[in-house]
Length: 210
Image (tube, rainbow, N blue to C red; front, side, top):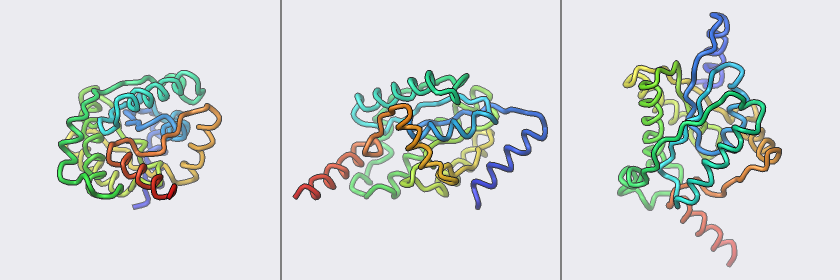
């Protein structure tokens, strides 16, 4: 699957039909969202959906949503994009990760986290009548676009809302997010967000300090 080509085909088809469809865009943080929104805002009516129960502690969660809200208010490419906040329910994430706490980042625990966040996005998209849903997660080199797309397409069938297949790190999407982060002075976290990735980060830092 060439996710970038598939997404571009969808955009061309919608534009050929004279449509600018609505998109519920799951956003993990402001830096990752920046280049994705810049790329998509000309083609979709976007609502930024912030649902990330994995993020710990709560202060970190609030800092990231505040950064996203600030970006939406300042960036020209975000004009007209509204922010929809989901509930902060960290117990839901802890239950999903149960038994997988010691796995390194990038494995089955992360896949469950993908599904948790995409499922809520799909449900919200169905409830609110969006034309598409997708996530910014694939812009990160640490996130597996194939698994995200596999999960999104499965949930699209379940919730009857098309999933926008994507791999936003393509065409220098990740590098563009770094540039935009510097331009807008965005806070760039040094761990994924969950307590387990934070512990992994702390172990790396401790090891490098020895």
